[in-house]
Length: 111
Image 1 (cartoon, helix red, strand yellow):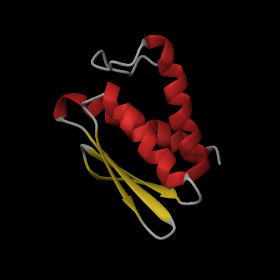
Image 2 (cartoon, rainbow, N blue to C red):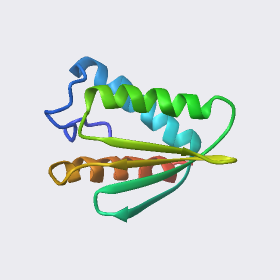
Image 3 (cartoon, one colour):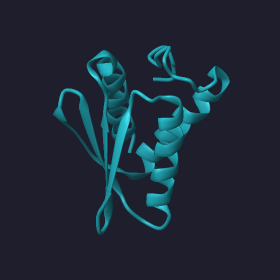
């Protein structure tokens, strides 16, 4: 899903930087995604394999993403060998979460 049409107008990240940010998320998913679930319609839960520097990487990416896309709420929960990343949105941004869920599933399928 290289087309960025799903990125909402409310995203404040400059257009030219969006492909780079998407690539960062895709790399994280491809390298670390262990499981994906959707416990609620507006909540996406990702379990990421841990390792040296992974928690810092996730927190940095989440912080930067929160700065441009304030409609996301991120909750990171580090575990012994994994990091849980919960991503939630309001009703208006449900389709954005759907697109993100599709990206995670595609990345997981490529491994």
